Image (tube, rainbow, N blue to C red; front, top):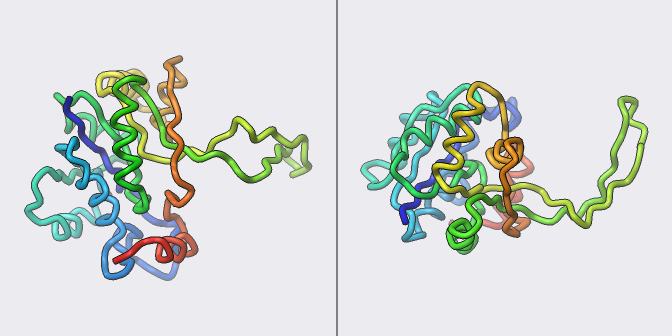
Length: 222
């Protein structure tokens, strides 16, 4: 079985902070770029033979400098939306059996979880890593008045990687091309396909703000 990885890195980091022009993926934690932590987690899994980074055009040269001459890594220009970026990544990794799709801004993903997804996808065909919701969830109306408290016992917070049989997710992208799904598992759900959950790790956060960066610093080692 052949496994590839698509890492999305096409965002503009607008929510990361107005005081910096640096893309968050290039920010360093313990002298190492966030994107490098992310990529290295997948490089440690022997089943994975190709990593495609779908990047914002503004950081492509930076990424090429970081991953100079590393075999198995391909850096391409992403799209205007996450969905378009992933579709470009899928087109760049044809002839693979399975594909893992991961946010570049989730550097705390572990190789152990990645390995579990590789085992599970061969049976289930479509899955997402997710963590059980621990907060109490309130549904509110347009005036921010609480309508009801939602039972959280069956709720999960979606993370990545999301892992699929290649032909299944590629077909979904072809059918739904031009739309703006922010979640690849959601595309399959929309088409009536079964998608399963692999319980993840609460530390596998997506770095979006400066506060998230401080949390990551507490967990990651240089």
